[in-house]
Image (cartoon, rainbow, N blue to C red; front, side):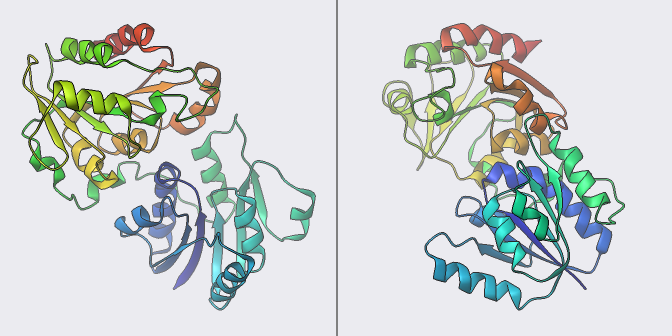
Length: 329
């Protein structure tokens, strides 16, 4: 039995990007026990994947909880430690845990890392993340090519999509990333008004059914849409009767609900995030909204995606024609 410890103490999307590498490791060794150190943001989602034997949430409270956490992991003898998140906290924690080989991703190789007996791989804006993951495996004597990019297809469906009587629809994920005051303030603000957004989906509905999902942060725009243009038909499901074709809005679905809905999606329009990578697993056409001066940064995450195209962030009046063009090109 090979015992492996993995650090991924960031977000759901970061974990999804790493799963193909983890599955490659699992397939290579066969008899394997995988412990994941996760964050409060991806801990629950990690448990739905059915890949890990144990999952621990990285302690953030105080030094005593961290010491107890390290002691618990220290008692288990690991063969490999993979630090995929590149976080200093993960690297320092791994230093105190026994393993035959420790491999870490890091954006900065600090001077005291040299005493840590780890193999470090540089991670920066110009790095292709999947190529670095592959190097981490090869340099750990794991001679297997990373694949399994469609791994979510094999995950058990929670069947949420059965509540929506449409298939092969245009899926628009409308979350806080469309508004820079709720996301990254230096990014271009897309900021659609309710009238602009309704006009946009009305144009799409001449050709396709539409499904709109929201993020977990409450948006004024979504409130306006629900109050003025949609009728409630279930707990968090709303329907618009005025369009040419069916238009549904799902307010604050879980990520597992979104995965279920992606199974029936034709195209996804969204700002870049976890949903982008989940859509790739289901062979959905992706229209990814990204910041233009960050295109090299995003390329490191998107190089492996199949049906992928991008549109640069602009105000919604300027961007809607680009989105429509990408949708039907």
